[in-house]
Length: 150
Image (cartoon, rainbow, N blue to C red):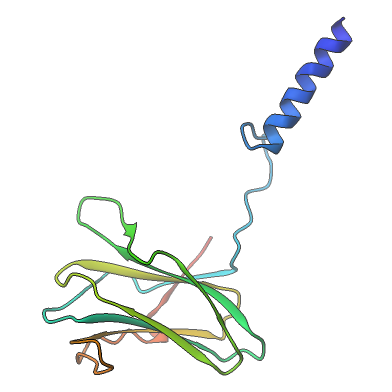
């Protein structure tokens, strides 16, 4: 009888671990799907902002997947991802991709880029309308992004 009770508890613990209800002390932390995480840090959208544009250039010799998330950072509250939410893109060798959306001016934002190659270069700019004319001083080049350490 004790053996059956022991086996029942053991099965319950294993099922709890497998389905994430329980964890094993000292277990390895969850693996992040991307090796590198870069951030613009906080920045303010200026007056007359029409579009916030981000660009990724893949200078790697292989196709790269990256995830880009735009956050709004309200003062005194937790930052939240804004529409369209985290975007996963695949960029071929030597190619670039971008996304542009309209967000409210006068608010603080952050853009995070997650990728697996240090040869993926991000760039952010703000346009006064839905055309590729950059508002002077709004560009955030690859060298200004900060790598976040795990």
